Image 1 (cartoon, helix red, strand yellow):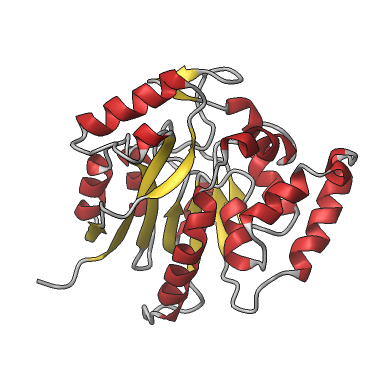
Image 2 (cartoon, helix red, strand yellow; image 1 turned 45 degrees about the horizontal axis):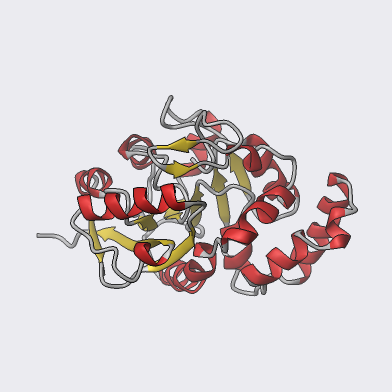
Amino acid sequence: MAGSGSGGSEGVAGGKSRFDDIYDRPDPRAYFARLAPLDYEIPHHAQPVLRRTATERTALDDGLPGRPVVLDLCCSYGINAALLNHEVTLAEMYARYTSRTARSMSTAELTFWDREFYAARRRADAVPVIGLDVSAPAVHYALAVGLLDAAFHDDLEQAPPGPRLTGALADVGLITLTGGGSYITARTFTALLDRVRRPVWVSAFVLRTVSYRPIERTLAAHGLRTTVDASRTYPQRLFTDERERQYAIEAVRSLGGDPTGREEAGRFHSVCYESRPAPPA
């Protein structure tokens, strides 16, 4: 999931740079400091889409008691949950965590500062969000500051979900993904969808360098139909170097895409896959 793998502090897996070390810190300051120069922006583009989708899914009467829960897959420090449920922008989060004030704090002080900050900006239409990421420090921080209602660090690529996560999946009505499509496979989605009880929607922002077809087939096997507007793309971040740019160009072409004006111009781009229960035949 986010930052998972064995590439070291910044390895290159398949041509794409990895930033494993920024996900294993006790708070998100290194995450924002490292990604700021690369203009990592996909959570910003996903924010209005996920807010709209969460509202629509919450309004759906699925015949079960209680409110459906959002599961943010590869959630890291709860960035999507912050943007979904609070009056804050990604630009404000970058400014906050790279500020002199934040840099001077201990993790405990930052946790207290963040808890008050997000509580004061909680939206009236906030929805329950649980987070899943292999980085225990990241999800624990997001839980500690109130961004997540529950946090899990099960690695579903390696093993089935534990009892706590299995119990939480019963209430999941929407699965979101914005930053882990390069690191997880259909194995993770199978583990999740085999255990949900509500009708589940999926909103996934996936890099154009990655084939989503195996996951689409898994979703279809669980009764979900996937749609995508491949002409609409969302910039993710700048490339770290020319090697990564060439990797992305070649990967997009190999999947039948055209990198002109997108990857060739210097950034990864994602497309948004929306999956919903297929209507009865």
